[in-house]
Figure 1 (cartoon, one colour):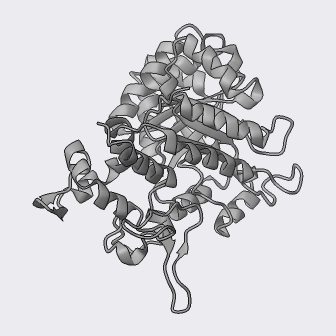
Figure 2 (tube, rainbow, N blue to C red):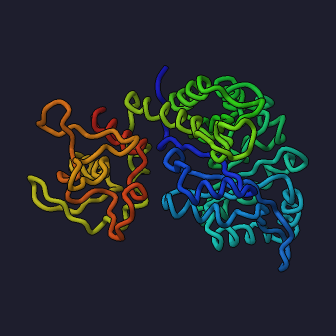
Figure 3 (cartoon, helix red, strand yellow):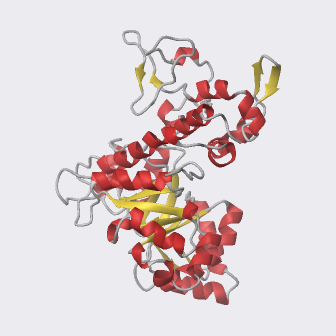
Length: 404
């Protein structure tokens, strides 16, 4: 089996907004937010806007507080508003009658409230309108840098059976992520071919597992295997339902003593496979640094050919300074030393062997005067450090010969 890995593998999860316990776990910093890069907040709906048309309403009473906690503890996280069936058909009708008025409302609401997109989890009467809905949203969302995900129940039915004859084209043209709820029907290895044979691009598909204690909970063995299948077959990523209730120790009591075993299993399965990838600069490395291009464009770096600008979106520039960049992104691998203890490896980090050093010697904070990303506001390092999967991809890119 060969790897068709696309851009950096996305790990997404859902988090509830109706449960005080789930919020308390965030407040108490008991939730590991390094296992995912996107969080869908469950749930909101499309409701009538006072000025006309429809807009988003987050109905969970703790939605704002949950969002604020995630963004405060993981500033690089992407937050989507999770939407159910309510209001989808009405929004589509209003858009057709009023020059996409409701789409404008939705874009404005997302921007005003700090969300980066929507995940549409229609499982009833809204499903027949989803394809047209995403087609209405797509151009405006792209223009504003917002994302669209569709969370798919019973994926073995296939796109046309669930969403109608226009679904394949609508999804390929407008949707960033199709989250296959594989736990509700078959498995990721079985459902993906149904969707790709129907014409849906593999690069927008995400395998899905259920981590909460329920009749459809995905076994840890399947979680591991499906995640590796997704990575090795060029899928966009994996998602889970749901982090706040992940493998709790108290039966089906919601959000009580979650162990986050499912989320960790996905993360470990993905990061363990990055070493066999053949990453390329355009597809895998350039996206890692996209958000830092502007802030770094005036930075000059010295090498044996003199001092030059570091252009993180330019292949030749990154190749020239690859070893310096590699050392810099490993600059947060260790916890700071104290007066009585040497640096300790950060949980989940994979340290960089010290060039020219002995076995077991690694690049330490003292060896990296300017770690990347930069941290001028002195945030806790875990809040600015690149995700481990991104660091692994860069390491693999160098090891594989720095393909363009």
